Image (cartoon, rainbow, N blue to C red):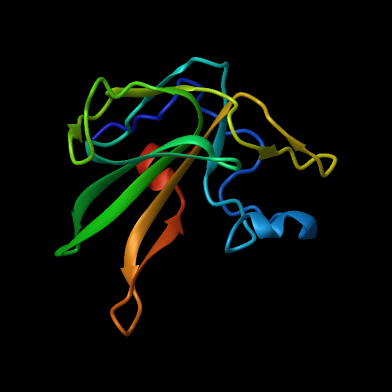
Length: 162
């Protein structure tokens, strides 16, 4: 299956997956590390799904800005794994009246890039808002007691890495 990045810019910028935040910004995530990949864009660039998936949620908060969450499943090593993709800092969603649970296909346009929410540049320790897409992938895991949780994974498995 060919790899499809969510935006046309094929190179991530800024903080790549797993980069450790400076001390003053570790509160931004549970791990203290950048949990996705940032792609520099212009405002209004199409965001395409890199995997056929089901629409899970549309949300807004001051850090992530406008964001969409999609779930997908893959059979791997005899086990069906559940994943979710999160697209953050959107200027507009393009869901065309679709509702939670609807299926979207590989390559379908779901949103436009933007600069909603905040973004840490890493250079001078300041928060800035720049047009970009933060793309994050998580896998559903379970504790030994059976409690579900989402574990961040490197999005490169889905979209490739240059």
